[in-house]
Length: 110
Image (cartoon, one colour):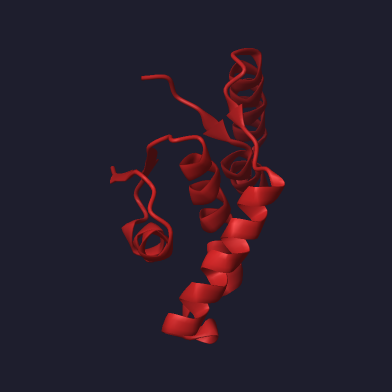
C-alpha cells in the first residue's frame, strides 16, 4: 500500500519542530515525499467540505466545546483523504470519529 503525506500534516510537523535536527529531518521527509510525488495537497472543495463539517460538529457539540480551530486541520486532512479514496491512519480517534459522523471516510486507529 503506498503511503502519502498530507501537506497539512507536514505544516503541523514544521510548526512543532523545536530542534535543528528535527527540522533537518522534516526537510528530508518533505523532499522524499515530493520526489515520490506523494504529497497530498487539499483542493478548494476540501476546504469547503471541512468548513461544512466543522459547522455541523459545532451545531451538534457546541462551538466552544469542540474548539473548531483545533479541528480545522483534522477536518481538512480527512476531506482530502476522503476525496482521494485513501485510508487515513491516526492515533486521534476522538477528533476523527467526530468528523466521520458527518462525512464518511476510511480511517484506522493506530
